[in-house]
Image (tube, rainbow, N blue to C red):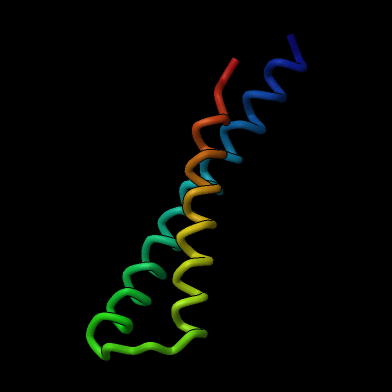
Amino acid sequence: MIERIKYNVFVFFARIRTKKLIKKLEQNLQDYSWHIGVEKNDNPELIRKYEEARTQQFIAKTTLKGLQYH
């Protein structure tokens, strides 16, 4: 019983952290896409950061789906 409560508390805080991370990554993606689109920028560093942020966002969303209460 105590283990289940500990697990649910862990999931609760992990979900909060993951949701904050997703919001941060969404903001970063908007910033990167704005710079790439407005400036017609072919900067490989900026494009790499955009792709990396998209990948991290996908991982965070997948992690969030896996964090289920029991």
